[in-house]
Image 1 (cartoon, one colour):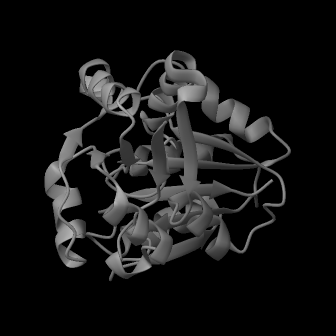
Image 2: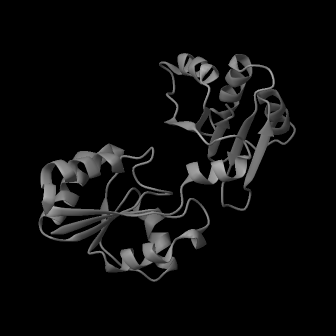
Length: 226
């Protein structure tokens, strides 16, 4: 029986990797990863040398076929993403689905949990998030404005990821559609040197970023209070 381990890796600080994740990476026959450069840095930090199989959204068919072949041969493959937990806004979910569909009981799939930008943002936001909706990355164009209106209408907290190239437009859109006084948390560079969480109304957050040129760099997690 092959084994597919879904291994969470640090979202910034390499010290956040779990002991079980390190043990799993050391035992695996191969590691499926998005970018060999990123994964190699992590492995070198902990003295791990393993064959790497490239698996990302653009080569999901070919990369996935290589992983499934290894699993069918009884091998142990650890799946990692560049940062965080595979399968969350990540093509890893497709690989897991294909492994279950094509290999069935011939493969063991296990979770090796750990860092996640979603969980990290919720933990520091300080907003009511007992019930929330996670949207992953918002669409770039089609349906974007409709989605902002849906966010404004929901009674639950809403969490999504955003890039530095679109964060300014996103905050402007939230300032337009959200009810006055509705608060948001914009978390940036979580677990890294320049980590910060800016809390307030969209207008207040926009003013904070505008006062500090360069603060719109990095990866963002946005939490909209219910």
